[in-house]
Length: 123
Image 1 (tube, rainbow, N blue to C red):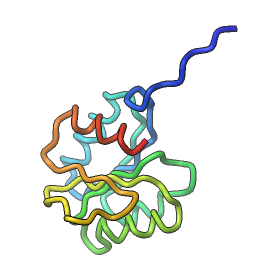
Image 2 (image 1 turned 45 degrees about the vertical axis):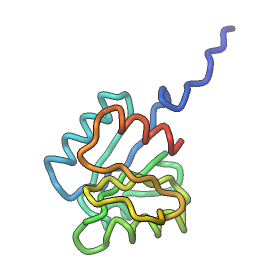
Image 3 (image 1 turned 135 degrees about the horizontal axis):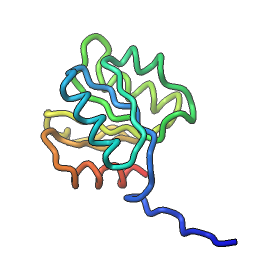
Image 4 (image 1 turned 90 degrees about the vertical axis):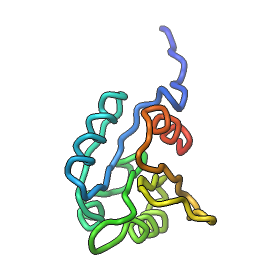
C-alpha cells in the first residue's frame, strides 16, 4: 500500500461557489477555476447563493460586493455567522482599512497567480 502526500494548499482541489451578477465575468471565472482543477458552480445573486448553499457543500465562496438586492457583504456576514465558510470578496472596489473577519479581498482585474494565491490563503 502506498500513501500519497497530502496536497499543498495550492494543489488542493476546492469546491467553489461563485456569486457574480455579470454573466461574462461569471462564465470566465468558472472556466478559469475549472482549468485550475477546482470544481465550481456559479449563481448571479446573493439570494440564489443562499438557496444553493448548505454546510459541507463548498470549501470557499467567492462573491462580488456590488450585487443587486442583497449585497455581497450581507451574504458574507450571513454565511460567516451561520456556516463559517471562507469568503473571498472579488470586486473592483478598494480593500477597506478594516477587513471583515473570515474574508479575503481579491481586486479585479486579477491575474491567475493572484487567484491561485488567494485560494491558497483561505485554505
